[in-house]
Length: 144
Image 1 (cartoon, one colour):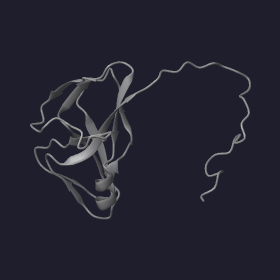
Image 2 (cartoon, rainbow, N blue to C red; image 1 turned 90 degrees about the horizontal axis):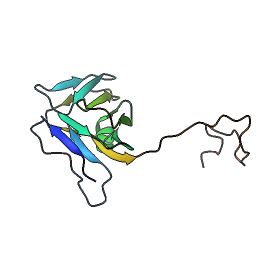
Image 3 (spheres, rainbow, N blue to C red; image 1 turned 60 degrees about the vertical axis):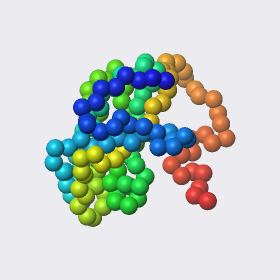
């Protein structure tokens, strides 16, 4: 699949790191570093603008290493970029650690996954089919 993209970032376009990678890294575009205080959040721009085909979305997801090593993650994970959005991709980062975290220009801050999606139509009914699970949720199947 080919997706139209505009970049003002000065960085290489996002790409897959391995043959089996699902996501492409997004990099911060900053004139000056941004310090995220503990529990602080900021929208970090990427300098990327994309044109997705209808029926697809781009999901902005955390980078596991950044989350595990620094406690920094994407606040609304996954963030959804709709096919009709033409603005700059921004990433809402949050620092869940107890230490300041400095985001530098060019730093890999999130990953982007392109995914096909369906559009649903509702069918209003008075009852749903029964299953063995029924209304069980929120841990009803146990932890082990």
